[in-house]
Image 1: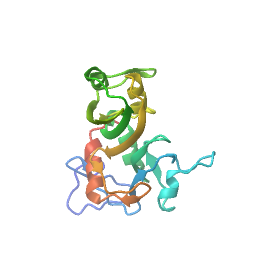
Image 2: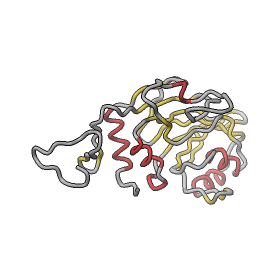
Image 3: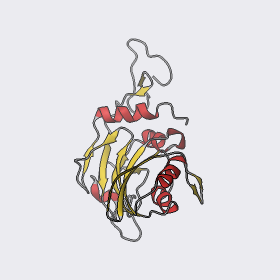
Image 4: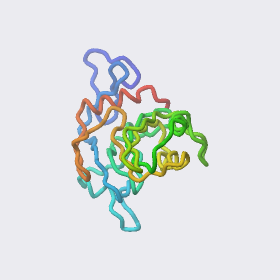
Length: 211
């Protein structure tokens, strides 16, 4: 507890003490909430918007106040975590965490082996070279190909810029998984609470992250 081994009879304060077992954080506070949202297109990943656009705040309960972990751009869809657990949010968004995120992208044309290899090895963008990614063509219908991509970075519009750079602009982009968290049955615009097991898995995923 708090970096020291707890002794028999030791009491913990849920509001301030950090309790871990084998390096994984144990959640004992009852004021923390963890929501998984399936964000539709044309919804902003913020809790308010000065331009009056729809926000993810409209998709979850008003209380307690929560905030998104990372982001999905305005035109993208899919899974997004929302919580009031600042510690977990910080760890998940830390560059050192390298949380894998899975996307399905509908792109123009049929990417060649060379284009897929470039996506896997890294693309030179205006803000630097991307880290190696996983990329595979799932299927092609007419002039549209469905790609599955897995990245461990969180740059702005990264998938779209990567695909544009290899000559295959994205028509539709859906995030289907965040680390160990996925839910193919969650409808667009819907949300659900994470289970304690899912929260534990997220903490396990980032327990070695430098802070």
